[in-house]
Amino acid sequence: MMRFNFPQFKHVEWIMNEKAPKLDLAWSDLRPDWSGVVEDMVDISKFSASAPEGSQELIDHLSGCYGVDPSRVLLTNGCSEANWLGFLSMIEPGSKVLVEKPIYTPLLEIPRALGADVSMIKRRAPEFKFDLKELDKKLSEGVDLFVMQNLNNPTGRALFEDDLRELSSVLDDHGTYVLSDEVYRDFAITFDDGPGINAFPSMVEMYDRALITSSVTKVYGAGGLLGGWLIGPRRVINKARRVKSYSVPMVNMIANLQVLEILKNSYKVLPTYFNDIRTKERLVSQWAAGRNDVEWSSPDGCAVGFLMYDHDVPSVEMCRRLYTEKDVRVIPGEFFHHENGFRLSLAVDYDILKEALGRIDDMLDSL
Image 1 (cartoon, rainbow, N blue to C red):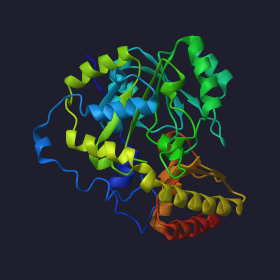
Image 2: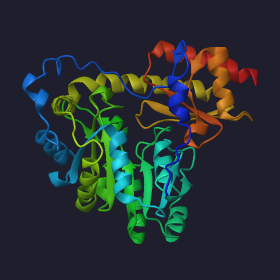
Image 3: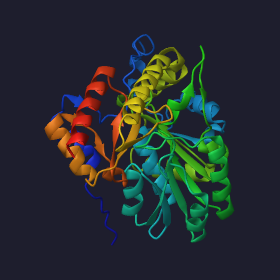
């Protein structure tokens, strides 16, 4: 009898089970002000709406954004459910799954719990790119599903169009499916007084065996709406629909309509927040350049980045000391399977970030 075995989710417990510090750099989502966009949208008549597929308007909008047929779009209750449905539709006991690292823990542990044979491949620091020869070798051993994120969590680094084209070519040589979590991807949107253009395409636009997952949680700061989606090959999406009918068969119709308005009007709200992220990224870059014991891998527009340090101190110990001694919270690299570093957020006030960097200075100087 198969037993699901989930290890402790240290990342969430690190955030939720401790008192919030004065300087909290653990969160990765923006908190945009959407007043004026969705505040008057509650339609009482929709309280009883229960279409399993959700809003067709939202489906059509997403199909246009990703350049796919609407039948390949499945609305979900957040990106987490989308990832679950993707895995449940692709994995069975004994499936061979290759996962990038560093990685957000559920994208590694869910395949393991489902009975997959899981191995890992590094994104190489400091640019956090793949060694394609290494990838080709690992895929040649027989891989059913490759799992990645773009933008990557915790580094905030992107694989751009040329990278994705080369990656897709290697995957295609082996007929390997890929699941790409793109919940941070829209941080790479460039706005120019109108609807934005993403700096790189979605994996689903590049490769016909790709599944992608996303939501309005991180970039749009609307996690409470639980608005997510899974997009992929029609055969896989049809299976995901069947799986979903046995778990949480409905999505929130009212939330769907709010998600649609947020996506359509993001160009009115997000540019200011993106400019702030760039300002704070420059602050961290300048600070890191002034030290000889750290390396900051500048994120590609993302609200999180990864700071590597040159000290023989495990990341959990380092971050615990920052929390207890300096009242600063960041996320240990160990939680992402990448030691000697930690993730810090740029989605905080400038003054909070600046003060936190000063306290990190003090900690590093004491080692």
